[in-house]
Amino acid sequence: MVDAREPAFLLSIWNDSEAEIIRELLASHGIECSVSSQVPHSVMPLTVDGLGEIRVHVPAPLLEEARRIVDAYRELAPATSEGAPSPRGELLSMSHTVHAPTRIDLAGGTLDIWPIYLLLDRPVTVNVAIDLHAVVEVCPLKDRRIELLSEDLDLRREAMDPAALVGEGPLPLPARLVRSFAPDGGVRLRTRATAPAGSGLGGSSALAAGIAVALGRLAREKPPEDVHALARRLANLEAQVLRIPTGVQDYYPALLGGVLKLTFAAEGITAHRLPVDPEALAERLVLVYEGATRSSGLSNLDMLRRFLGDDGDTRDAMAGVAQAAADLAEALATGDLDAAGKAMGREMAARRRLSPTVMTPVSERLFAAATTAGALGAKVCGAGGGGCSVYWAAAGGHRQLAAALTAAGGQILPFQVEPRGLLAAAPAE
Image 1 (cartoon, one colour):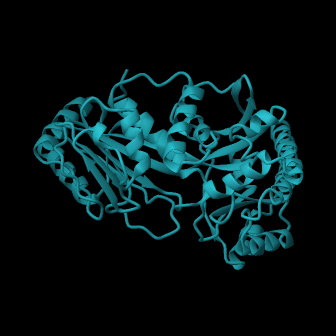
Image 2 (cartoon, one colour):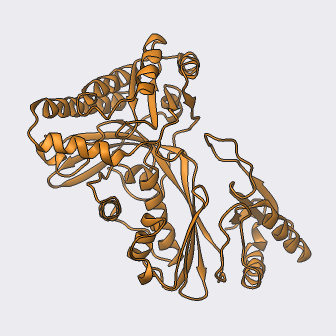
Image 3 (cartoon, one colour):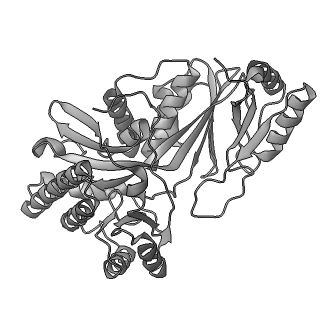
């Protein structure tokens, strides 16, 4: 039963000028609405207009009437976003917006790349979903026109229909995803990242998951029940764009949320949600942006070549990564956060041996500062080579560690653990 006392969510808007129009439009029909906005986490100061999501709520009993009013308005006056690429197609109806969590990989990254995990004994990857989201908005259009717009990259791409999204062009990953999850009719797809580009937080994979789920909602499809099949499909599509092998771990935090232990075997992948207090974990982790973009593909490709080339030291190092990841998962499962932090440090010690591309001079400086400040462990995010790194504080040492890393030139990225993913009902064993 609808609770008339609670406001109901009507829609998301991307700029405050349109929000004011919607507010006045509804008021003219006797519907009072509330408008709220929240500037997303960013490494740059942002204004709300054109970049922040604005959420409109109305009294619950008037929700359907408000939708009809806004639908009629948008058919006559398509929405635009100031400061973003200007849409051209004519909107059909309400938009669907999804927020896909990115992730911090605590241990076991790279092990999720085929066929590395087949040559190890059931290795695990441990990661945690965080609230630096990739945001995807999809709107149906009256014709078969496809409009792709990236607000943070200030790029756009258009085609007369999904089949025309071929060949070279901007926004290759969204283009390939729209072709694969081809909508029945035209669509405007608008994206925005709140994590820095090239951060090593799995932003492109979160974006891919968000696009797939948003297009499914637009088509009124049921959420996919096989999260593993969806993750494999997304990884295959991203590999086609990057033209190098890709892992699959990044899709699971976006789809499932929480703190995850992923186990890889010839029979398939299992996802297990670890019983970790989100606030307690966030109080132990300090996330730092180094300010340099990175190419995870190049680092991963170098590691893969060394591993498959039967480089003895690389294989020993990969086994060390796998053992540390298993130790970290066990420590989290038993609630021993100190042991988990030390396991993350051992994982990084082994990871440094995988490739000279893992560390940068900035990483070295930050790691040294963290050690002096009493960090239990430090690790590059993703494949390293710049972007973000994460540091495990001793109990009560978060503020001191963050201050030391700031003094060393790092930029702290505040975050919270995101307990829910895009497929909130999807099982994690």
